[in-house]
Amino acid sequence: MRHLFYIHSAITYLVALEVVRFNRLDRSQCCFLLGRNFYPSTPEAGIALVPLPYTHHPINSFAVERQFWKSWRKLQAFDAFVDEVTKGGEFHVYTNQTGIDFIRLLLSHKSCAGFSFLEEGLYSYYIAEKVNTEICPGGSATYFYKLLQYLNFKGRLSQQPFFFAEGYQAAYGVSDDSFPGFRNRTVLGNPFQNDDPAHSIDGHILVLDALLEYGAVTKDAYEAAISKMFSFFEECEVKRIWVKFHPEQYAHNAFLLNIRTIIAKNRGRVEVNELPPHSLLERVAGNKDCTAKFYVFLSSVGLYAALCGRAVYSFANFVGDMDRGYQSRIDSLPAVFKKRVKFL
Image 1 (tube, rainbow, N blue to C red):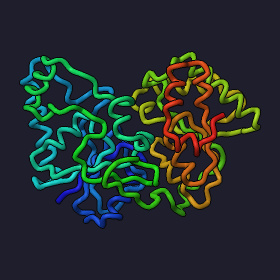
Image 2: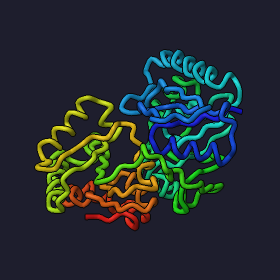
Image 3: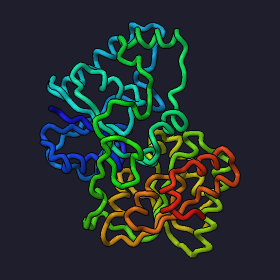
Image 4: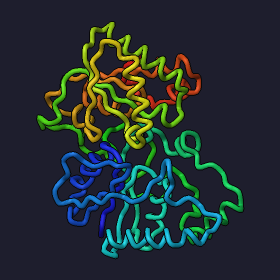
């Protein structure tokens, strides 16, 4: 049995490694399918790393075509890719969600023997129904679209694209609060704790999420919040910060240039240093010598740093004060985030 893990972030990578250890899986039978340009800075020996040649956002590799037969070649190539990775044998899929088309195609592959959930961010701290119906609803589709989808992918994508589909084998989390109400819930050991000097960073770490890039906030509100944030740093006599950009900001040069420009325009006398794209901040937070303070908006890194005992502050209210839509996101945060992170 092969074990396919969908890895697209530091948290999925670290949780996946913990699942391998917890279940004592044969590493030679494990394959990490790397998405969203993620690549671990220190790859684990014995586990295959395979860049995933498919995307979900902003381009869906398996978008429905009106000329439905064009998708048959895509489906054939996908199945050939899976057969190559799995050597044609049965496999189990581990993923943070099931609403992604290429994940649904994996699950409907003839050799798929089942799937499990991996904790990844704040979505793992809601009940499944809330995520599926309120936070990430699958939406409705016309009969014509459903027919086209069926014809495009020969029925492989005909099911409702729930973020958390039923039928999973297990849900692997890192705290007692994760996956509330899920059956077969397994709480792993803390995957962030370490004594590696490479993960020892002191000072003040700012973790950005993709608020602007995903259209979750207006540019005016975001820029005003960034300006207020740097005023806060100056008032607290913070001379230098480390900043970690979101993967979505690295995905497009225009996004990266825009956020760098906004920071340069508002940083004042605060020195800003960028952390490498693949820095594992959860491991930084879990380092035994870490004394850093973490600053976020709504990034899940804030929760994980807090779970590791670090001081964590959120600037989310700086945005919420000017953007009602964003304020609703703050209001609907899982209780554990509000409990562990101090909102400024």
